[in-house]
Image (tube, rainbow, N blue to C red; front, side, top):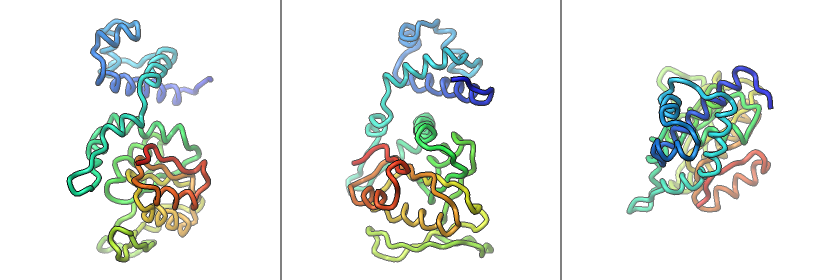
Length: 239
């Protein structure tokens, strides 16, 4: 497949990110044997001094995809504390892993104009996804900012809290007809994500899809499956 100059540059930069991930598991000597390249050449790629050409980038990505399963890497980092609360910090703090997650979203969805999430833990992943698509990212707040009145509000009742909650999105943050990709790190009951879907509709936006990293239990997944066509919903790891 022929690429234009920008696509080629992005693809080659992705190959460098892939090498950086591989360097976590292999020494330079091991990578040298696996990829049949001198360690000095690999070092120049990994340190960002030079980009591989398209053919070599394709080889790096193919090797990576044959040895690395994103879902397994996410599963390794999933922890629950003594009270049963999900700790996602080892995912959110890892920029290389976030890049891989964002790449999966880029491969899965198309025609995305903007990324939408809710504060706070959804923001790191949403930023990486927005960067992968080269679009802006917006997020809802749980409270209105002082001095700003032009919000669109959506209320919902989280099953874990049993009280009314609100999400606030600045009116001018989303334009009519924009195709939104909703992104979140964890899906539990699905109420927050459904509220984001309703907010998008209030803004007269279209839904490009919903992308989640981890879902806990079947309730939230089933609720979203009832809201969206199968081709618009992607959850990487279901617990």
